[in-house]
Image (cartoon, rainbow, N blue to C red; front, side, top):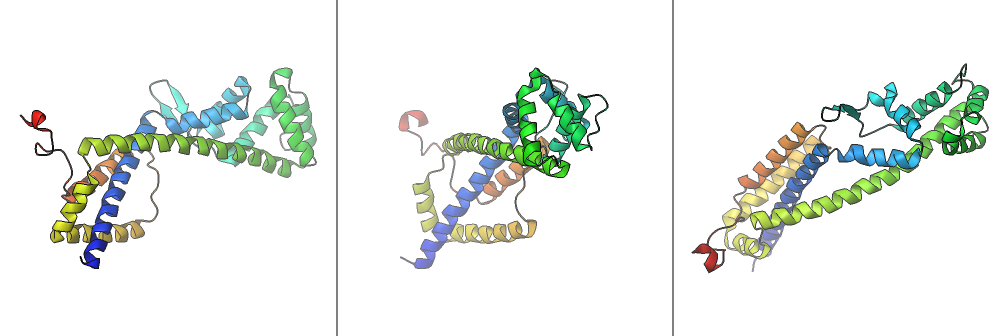
Length: 259
């Protein structure tokens, strides 16, 4: 048994499953775009952060935040999937300042007064912002940074929720894909071991893929569903080009099914 053959078979198996995992990742991106999963998860995080519905609505309607979203034609609303912490802090401070006539958002004393004058409907926000201003010793720049830090901490939890959800979706997609195209690791290993030409083809494809990946840089999330579909088709094409022995055939089906 040749060591080089064992290495080539191992490389072949790893590369095949890397490509299949990329197909699943592309499908996951398509699902995320269709169901607006990122926007939905962000909205859930903002709901935890800002318990008052009116403040949340004003935040998403603020020009700074609204400009970050994409209009959803199905509900005629702008869906925002990402908010920079600086934009959040600026928009929130602007909203609070607008609650008090004559308040200048650049004047720490007047801004603090506006916070103190928030009615009981905004009691949770008032308490949080007063604590932030106290820790910043009423210095506006420090207070703004603290608001940004408050938001960033919340978004870390949101990222955790999204990653966990994506992992479950990927697990389901992987199971469906493996069953659908009948990826039999044992059969694939035997075929690779018995077919030196196939081993060499997959090894060369793996080397080429690594070189192309390095030149393109790190993989990024698709910006829209068309880009996600293009990426999915490209990765599916990569799998087909290998001509690997996967898929269902009458020879692999039970005799009853083949009759």
